[in-house]
Amino acid sequence: MSGGMERRAQSTDRLSDRAIKSWLTKRRAGTATTTKLSDGGGLYLTLTPSDSAMWRIKYRYGGAERLYAVGAYPTIALAEARVERDRVKAHLRDGRDPVQMRQLSRVSAVTAADTTLAGVTTAWLAKRKADWSGIHFTKSSQALERDVLPLLGKLPVAEITPAMVAKSIEGISKRGAHDTASKVLWHLVGIFKLAQARGWTSTNPAVPVREELPKKRQHEKRPALLTFAALGEVLRKADVAPISPAVRMAHRLVAFTGARIGNVVNAPWSEFDLENDVPMWRIPRKRMKVADREHDHDMPLGPTIAAELRTWKRATGGGAFVFPSPMGNAHITRESLEKAYRVTLGLAGTHSVHGWRSSLSTLAR
Image 1 (cartoon, rainbow, N blue to C red):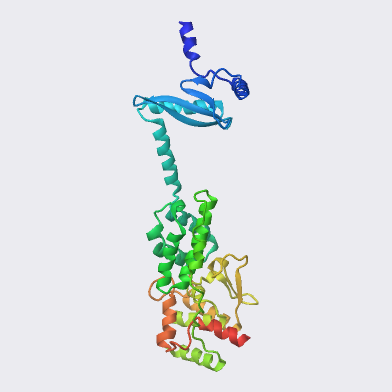
Image 2 (image 1 turned 180 degrees about the horizontal axis):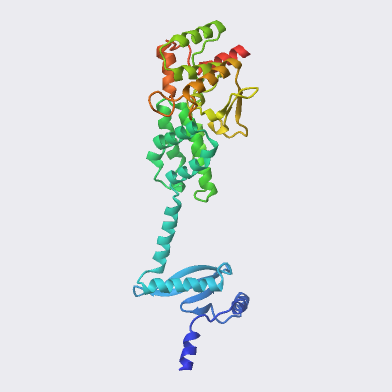
C-alpha cells in the first residue's frame, strides 16, 4: 500500500531547480541523453533551437494530443509552471480546451481595457479634465463625439490608419469649420500618444494628417467701437434699455474689466473680494481659456464697478452666482447678454460683448 502511494506521489513534481540547471548544462554541452525534462503530469522542459528553455504541457482533448505553451525558464519558475499545469488539468476536468480558454481570457482582458478609439478617448479626456476649463472640456468632448467617434470609435486604436483619420478631419474642413478640424486633430494626436504609452498601438496615425489641414486663415475680427465717446454712448444707452437687471449688471462688469463673457455669466460670488483695500476678482485658472498655467487670474476692480457690485450683492442677497437668472436657472446665459447687444441695443455689426476686450486693449495702448 505504501509503495503504491509512493509511486503516485512521484508521478508529478519530479524536478528541482538544481536538476533543471544540471540538465540544461549537459544539454547545451551535447552530453544530455534526453531532449526533454519531465516534471510529470504532462509538464516538461525543452530546449529550443534558439537555445531558450521553454515549459510545455502535453495534454489530450477531443481525442487528439495537443501542446500548451507556458513560457520560458527561469522567467517562469518551476512553481509557476506547476500552477499552470494544475490550471490546465482543471479545464480538462470541466471539458474545456485549455488553449481556447486562454485565448478567451486574453480577449476579455483586451475588452476590459477598451482599446477602441472611443475607450482611449474617454480615458484621455478624463486626464485632461482637471487642466481645462469646463467650457473647453465640453466643446472638445462634443467635437470628438460628433466628428470622429461615429466613424472610428468602435475600431481598436492599433487598426486605425492615417487615411481613416484624414477622412474624419476632411469632413470637418468641408463644412468650413477649419479651426475645429485643427483642434480635433490636435486632440487625436494626444489620444494616440496615450494609446502608445499604454502599449495599445505602436504608431500615431494622427501625426501625418497635419499635412491635410488647409492653410490657417485669418480670424474674423469681432465688431468693436474704438473711441471713448462711442463706448460712453453704449454705456448710457444700456442704462435705460429694457433689459433685465442681471443682464445689465453683467454688461457693466464686462465693460469695466474686459473679461470674457464665459467667465462673467457664470461667475460665483466666492471669486470676489469687494472689501479688500484693492477690490479683486480672482478667476481660478481652471475657468480660464488656457487652464494649464500655474496661477489664477487676479483682476483688480476699479472704484466704480466695485461699488456697483457691493450694491448689487446686497440687492440680490449674495447667492451662489453673481448674476442669477430671472428665468429660474442657476445664472444668466451667454445668449441673453449677446442678444441684449445685438437686438435690444441695436449694436449688431458695430459692437459686441467680446468687443470690449478689443476696445480696452486698443485704447490702453
